Length: 110
Image (cartoon, rainbow, N blue to C red; front, top):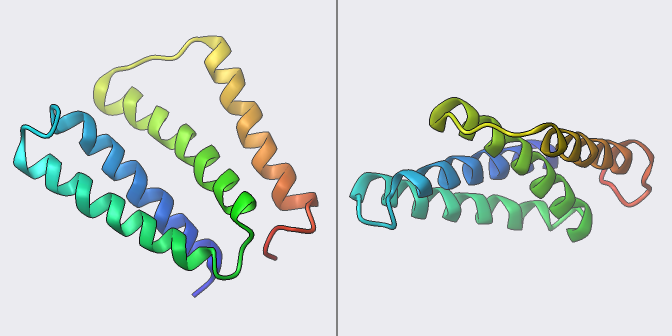
């Protein structure tokens, strides 16, 4: 399996876990709390597999950058949380940074 598929799985699992974290209401609700624990467990397991072949800085840049954007979209859709223009520009810069790493860095796993 491609290292990028494993990293993508880690990112999605982390976004699901973070979304459930809000729904867990401080770990007072069982089902969302269970999703949090399982989601973070799966996310870190997949991230650890990624780190066997990808530099930790590159993996973490991709993980955190895409995670920020995805969790913002989840917050907008599920929790009706909005962002202002400055936050949107900041996230666009994060995505641009991840793209620069992927396209131009010799340290990224290709």
